[in-house]
Length: 407
Image (cartoon, rainbow, N blue to C red; front, side, top):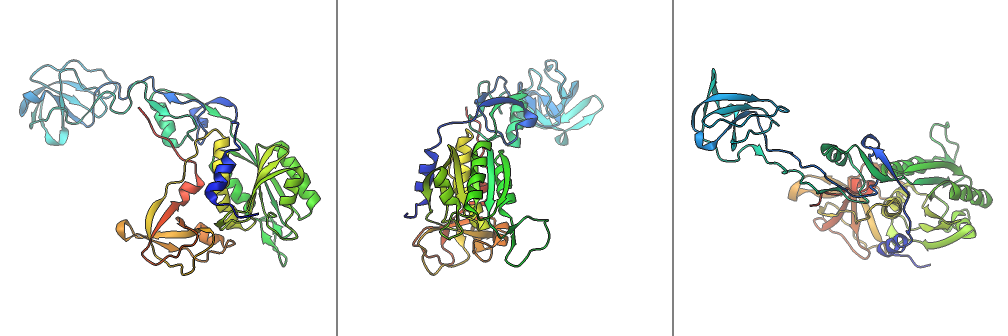
């Protein structure tokens, strides 16, 4: 089977999504990282009235400069009286500007003398936050499919919303395979053994998407046991993610067990790291068979499984933002696959450079942990120091995107 370019693989995988979870209503305290089921519009105007952006004195600009009597004191939350012409009102940040006033003068620029205040010239509108400057009645606050972030929850609360309709979070079964794997905390390793990092890493990636990981443990390299575990996973979750057993070795049994119980839609990606990726279904449940090498598993989940899960969750899928950075390393030989190189960003502005975090081996997790992102090197391309590279941040790969207010 020929290697499939990443863009083609994503198009094929995303085209299989035809359903989304049912919706439920939750309070804002339970809405973090949930995907919005119905777009929300504001029934309020924010701010609801002109208010002061500073502590100071509300005046008519035509009455200053000069010394004015102080006619009232306006704390935030207390309704003012109309401003008497030729007077000033002592006003505090957030307080409603009294009718008749058209400017606020900072207290630092004023000198209060008993019940009067000496004030400089004022420009009409200065230091006043106008009604509706933030949100107008009917503005869309969050879009359908948006993943709610802390700032979105604050925005909804600012217009008095206490509950929001969201999709039920997906359950994602995690299964690793390998005779050599031991669980962290299970004691010292015997010769040939390694600790199982993929299960906890994949669970963390799934939780970061606001979804629920279902840990089905590790299965030894026995075809019948792997097949039985896949059947359990198919009935216990909305999607299955495995790590290991999808390459071409004699002990790689996951791919065959998928085909024995379902269909295989895609196998082998034209990317590095992460070539041996399988996608299909087992008993009607979508499955991603990720490579066993931990960096390859992380990269293929972030690039391929994450967009599928977000769309299946009811979210909106968009390409990860990329930004240009000059290379601080060189690649003398062109590769045959699109490569995602772990990099650290050094410097700032035009002096910023992307430098390698160390060995780019697919088994070296330190280079992933130390990375700020990935530089994308197209197939057949060499790189010289100073060349422009496209970079994807680690945050963009590990988290769902956020929406924006739209009027």
